[in-house]
Image 1 (cartoon, rainbow, N blue to C red):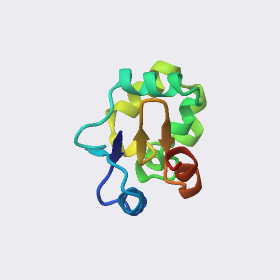
Image 2: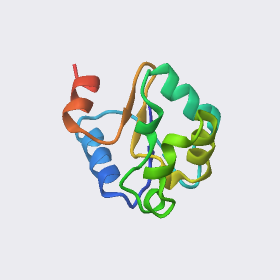
Image 3: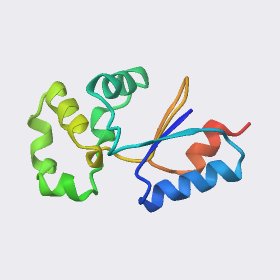
Image 4: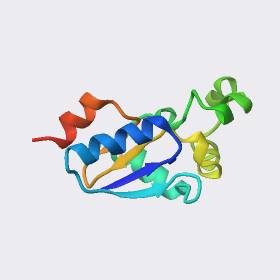
Length: 117
């Protein structure tokens, strides 16, 4: 499974601590240095039947600076995917991707329900 993270993010750090505490193996990927591509983002949100907006880091500085709260509804799917893939800081983090799941953000109970027996 892959954890896509921003290493300085406190939520990402908590997610890694949780994974480590539960002895769950994962690889990491820096969300800014290796920003997900349009193709990856599209595959993830379609395969897991989630709204595309859920991938946006709506509390992030870049999101606010670009005034996306007002603009997002007028952008096409392709425009939104292109925007997300242009700047990793626009993507909600962490993302934990497994063979049959996608977890967006760190919600301990959701992660436990998905990952623990």
